Image (cartoon, rainbow, N blue to C red; front, side):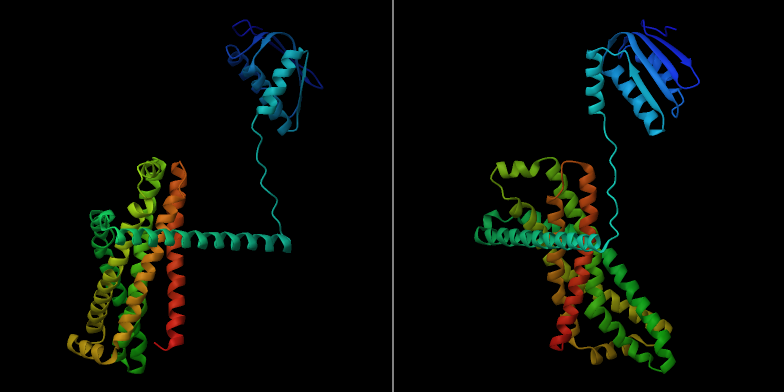
Length: 376
């Protein structure tokens, strides 16, 4: 049978094996005519392919025969190629060696040594990440020092722009979040304190919780989610388009141009956002206390002033610059780690958000232990 282009194929089905006889040129121009019939052979059986009548074989034909062999071997069958000239055998060998090999996943190590090794790898990776963050913190401080020493190099326009992006545009979501947190705290506190006739202490609960912990912590988490990802995406996109290499070629320092305005904007705006969160959180708590407990705004204000020390406010605000440095450094470093593809950009953006939020929570825990030890 000659399907076309002078290529012939004959298939004889026997009891032990199927015999396939190919004839004529077996090249890229003719394999389409016989590929369907070769693919229709039962993969679990034995097949003998006779190439003695083939006049010409190129890499496309060799690829089809190699794929046929691999498919049958994977299904438990066999394919024997006979009658090939030395030139054909060389082409078949070259194509077989060039075929992609399926990757076999490494065997899971359930032993104690494997578990210890995995823990060690993760600890080493965490150490490298901390060293990298410390390095980028140093780059920011060095760039800030150069900007202070040479005010003409300081990019005031970029700083104002990033202050708007980081601070002003984040005010609605931060204020709404803090307001709702105050409402929830007041409602839950009222349910518990009413059992003991101590409803008035809900003011202390709201004030201490928001001013000392929740106001700045939740603000930092929201800023980490929206700002760290924005920093990573912006810097990563510039790196993908080789704009950062162009900056270096022009003699511009990426740390001064990219890192300093972004991180400095965070340092300026995060304390302000924390203050806004404190105010709206207390307003939300006062509103719910009035509705649920009948604590009037005047009584709430009096209790707030008398029972809340200014040290609680200072404890919360002291954390803001540290959180801002963490978020900014993590976002900028992740942007510089982006490779030349969109997949890497997405991975680093997600990683920067997770890392920034985790680092902020860890830093808040360390601050809590520190202030508890010094009695503040």
